[in-house]
Amino acid sequence: MKLPVVQRLGDGELIRSGECFCTVQLWALGPVHDWNRPFALELLYHRSMSKGALVQEIFEQMCRVSASSLTPPQCAVWPNIIDEAFVEVHPGMRITGVFLPGQGCSVYVDGKLSREITDPLFARTFFSIWLAPCARDTQLRQRLLGLAGNDRGA
Image (cartoon, rainbow, N blue to C red; front, side, top):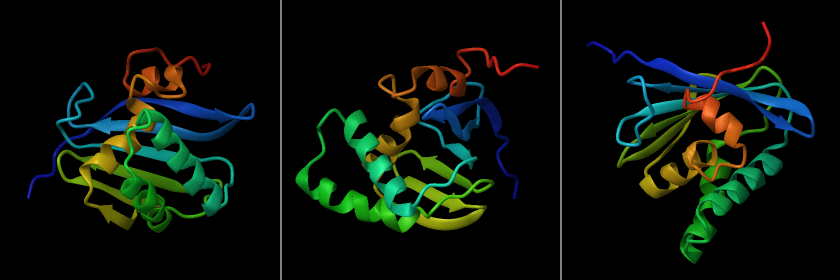
């Protein structure tokens, strides 16, 4: 079996409270990000965060990027899905999300499958936190998509 060749499109740092919280990398099958093809977003954590705080942050950001279009059933179910997929993070941990168009996504913690999510809308909304035009950190989005230089010093 031949595995597809992926390439890193871009990377950047997610800054919270003036400190680097995690380094983010976007991996894709081609030279540009395409919502119609699988891709992966890898987060390498530099700071700790409790599972509860991480779940709350992810859900709040998903609500923000969905422009208030979440239905009551989604609002009831999605926090549970996030809670099942994510863990308390510590410096050095890696969480990788793999987007599968039309199917959903998979979440890996330190290389081990944590949860498969078979909800395409959940997956699209989750990855939109970083990749949608309305992403909270537009400079990070530009870097991930390979649209901006990465000025982290040489």
